[in-house]
Image (cartoon, rainbow, N blue to C red; front, side, top):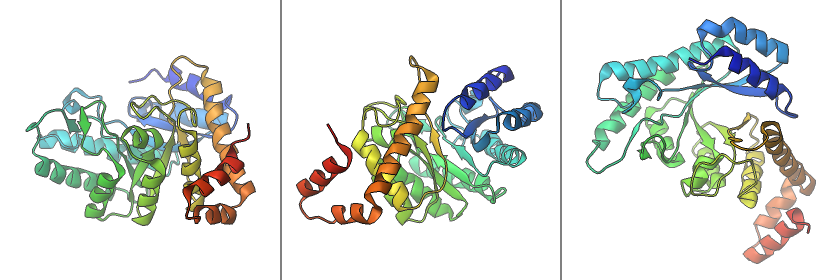
Length: 302
């Protein structure tokens, strides 16, 4: 378990970041019922809201080869219990959602997994977790790989299939911009797919080079794609959190997270200045170079 002093230090840093008003907290290794009272004091002291409780089902030794898809029923039950407990914890801190990225549930080699059986286990375990306290939605975060060579839930389409098969409207998808990007997908297109299929979504923002989940700051490597992503969030009237899943490994923490806020807000404001109806008219043009000409005028001033 994490030393709670580290959590307190993170809150100090968070409060110094202009534009940041909430935090996603990791259960049970960062926050848990043992430090609940201390956490409540921090939330009150710094006037920070809990955007989401992120439940970790990969750290335990027994989860190393898969938690939600383990062949051992007791291990699967424990993974489900982690998610249920995270919902209890979310309720205790007035968080309105829980999210889980099942990173240890995957494979590396041919004939390593019985794919049909794995799918049944995923359906069963995620359905159980989603059925518990459905007023606190469960969002499933997909990722191409890491810590496994390939994660079973590696893109939006597959995750949508899972959720549709379960049939529980309180289960949604966490769309991590960078996971979509380095999975060779288009974040805006995956967002549109979620919207079209009526699956609720929660957003993580960052950037990368399309080759790995570097968690760079927003717009640093794929600016126009990020503009398109923000456009679709506005088109669909997304009112949820934009959670910065960014890793400032060798850069100033405060400045990097402020860049996320600043870039996202600048793009959003510019779209408002252009006007959604004007933007929509641009996108109806049949010749793409005419569309690009408008985009240059809207966003590129050199």
